[in-house]
Image (spheres, rainbow, N blue to C red):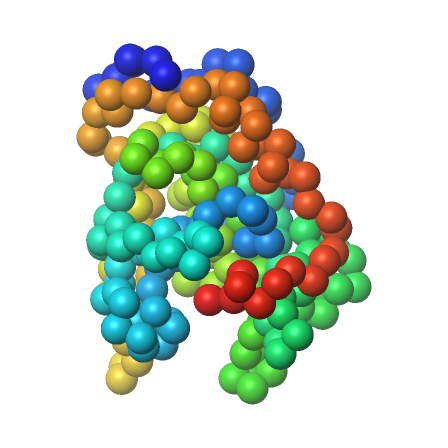
Length: 219
């Protein structure tokens, strides 16, 4: 690993494959072997099981949950469209925006009916690097996270050190947690190893256009 620090300045990772050029219009404003970071909601399973607090970010992989707290620092490296539908059989995933499967999931996710919306999400999947945990994915698949992802896309295009935090949103009697993203002001003592970063990029991008992933991928 490099000993370069960002010292609040832009960090460009030379030698990495280019950032994805997928069409992401309408997706801003893990069916993967990579662990994933997820912002815990009041209704999230691990919260209901007493394993973590709502509003905390959880790193989930191989049945293990690591509490990252209400904020963390990372470097976003890439992103791609992703639509996901959960049901009793597992998780159906599509990375092909505009296909019948994608459109079906997105239409259900945008339905005014809670019953129809349930189990359907679409948005952007991000590859991010955590200094202490390595390469993981983060899925901005809800309406709130898609809106926040407009900022994250810009940071990912520059591969700029980024600060994630959660915020409690109140709308009338409703309350829920949403993500916030901003340039990081914390110096990074090291940067990702370029060879490992390119391997992680290959894993992140090497997905079938549609597939049923095991139920362990569910929230």
